[in-house]
Amino acid sequence: MRQGGLRFGPDAIRTPANVVTIARLLFTVPVLMLIADGRVGATSWAIFVAWSMLWVTDFIDGWLARRDGTTRSGAFLDPLVDKVLVLGGLIVLAVRGDFAWLPVLLIGAREVGISTFRSVAARRGVSMPARRLGKWKANVQFLAVAAALFPPTSRHPGIAEVVLWAAVAMTLVSGVDLVVHTPRPPRPSPPVVSS
Image 1 (tube, rainbow, N blue to C red):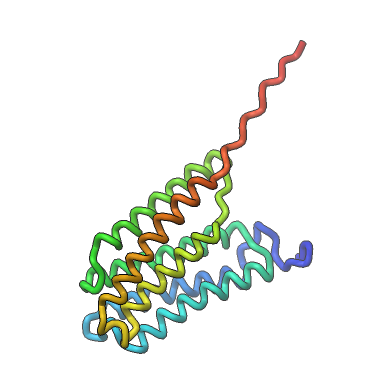
Image 2 (tube, rainbow, N blue to C red):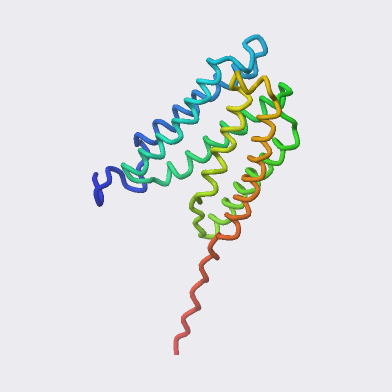
């Protein structure tokens, strides 16, 4: 049902944006397996293109959500899939030795911490919508993995390392930004005293 010019209401589940999001999640697994497979190599053009497709489809499902109407299911699924994709890419590259573990662990700790913070806030009735810094953060994280997979830059590991540490900085700053701008929980209504 069209509401206010939008195709879907906030409770909709089967939306084009969610279809793209689920497809991204399903496609993530074979891409990560290809990156991890030493026989294929982490710097082939095919793997770089596959990763780039996962990155670009993040913009597509966001555009679809804005066009058709944002939903609660999409607000939950999209950042979850982003985290699975980015953390999966970072961890696989760390296991391969392309990335140091410290920056990967810092990014992972921030993501787990903020997810826990969001969960606690939601139980208290506090909504924490995504902030612009959070989207920038995700794109820099995607870029860090892309820099390690892109064949020309993969031959110069210092480039990917610089981008990775920039992702760490953006990740930590965006986490602080989100916490600072979290609204306070609603105050309970005072009890009504009958005279």
